[in-house]
Length: 592
Ligand code: GDP
Ligand code: PGA
Ligand code: MN
Image (spheres, rainbow, N blue to C red):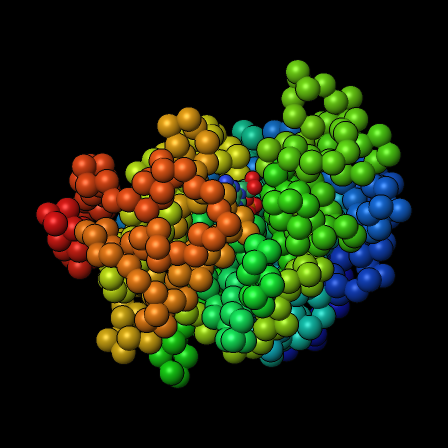
């Protein structure tokens, strides 16, 4: 059956859904699906999709006594992470995409990928997924529609976004939405592209079923397309978690933090306070773990929403000890991708710290000598509401006011535990100069240092030079903007061990930041910013070696000289488009 079925159960001709219906018809004519399904987001719809995926092996039933409603998906072994070298930003002018992006002209890109989409859904069902990024009634939220031939994508989008009827109603009201077209295709890495057309508010993704490549609401829409929209409309779309820190006096401060993929966003967002802090009444509440949309409110402060509704978190390393909230979140109604399983069919991964693997992520008997049980980038997809620290403020249409912005990465050497930027411009430079070791979240080598400004290297939908200028433009002199900090949880000693305990103990650093925001905590000035001394931070109950104290709280003048030369070269590599103010700031510090 290749005739295109009726494509317009949504709205009537002439309604503001006419554009959507026309696009769906156009896509159906190109991809030639057997059937078209408009997703309403209902439980019944999800149950039917899951049953179909169980029947065809896309989903494997986990132990529903221990993990009710949870499923395992084994991806193609060649399709386990984002593919940055196959991800393109297709602006009419190459310079608008910038050296930070792979570029193709829109005409070439459409031609190349449409040839792959031609007839690709024959024998498959095409799903139309209306979704809203952000609380359904928030002025900061934006809608999109993803067309996909993957029921696994539908099931994940249902968890990660507000999907279905309410989103469609908002699209009908607003008449605008981001168009995302996705097919898993043949899963052939040679026939795989993730293309973005910011001017057309369009995404086309072919040949991958992996989260960041296929759940188009996430990195493709909420970061690459949204960063472009945000620039035009005066807001910020950032790769940041958002958490609330409530102190014993009952005051809550919200903090947004940008770390590269697999550098601790999910963990920080769900932090469990150390024993002493808990006794004193400190509390953490989770708004988001990956993406943050912010805009100035009437009072000049930045207000933030989490555009997502779920977590797509890294499983390996998640344990009762390291992240009890994440582990509690994923006891039910969770989709696991590329984890191992125990003999009694419970999900298992390296660092879980309990149980034994029997089958690895490829579905073969576990053999420690052959491969890990879970792929290092194995993931869980779960509704944010299942997190014990989930904050109802995540549904606040106005967003939450941000007191501090934090940048950070994996820096085994040089970079101290924390420092504070002197002002907004310096803070933008701190973000622009961020570096981190690469991780398993993207294909390619792991553990290689690269510049990853504001953790947006893979996600900024336009030229970084223009992006930094956009950031700088928020400084209106009112001093109501968040303070900016840099952290490094990953500093190593000469022995190769992490010097900072991290995880729950990171609250000690957040406490210092809030103290700085309120003008209560001490610091020493250095060329790179304001550093706490070991005495300015609450280190009660920690046993830090002399080496740890020196490296976590010290300023290494010689090393930083070299670092600032390298930052200067990096800024220069963007040519005259790089904002003068940022170069001036770099020069001032380099000469200090
Ligand atoms: P995300 O992808 O940025 O959300 O990163 P995750 O929170 O999932 O963490 C990625 C990896 O970093 C996991 O293996 C964590 O165990 C590890 N990690 C997270 N926070 C810390 C920390 O404070 N210290 C150390 N040493 N490792 C951490
Ligand atoms: P993350 O993103 O690695 O920042 O958690 C997941 C993804 O690749 O989509
Ligand atoms: Mn994460």
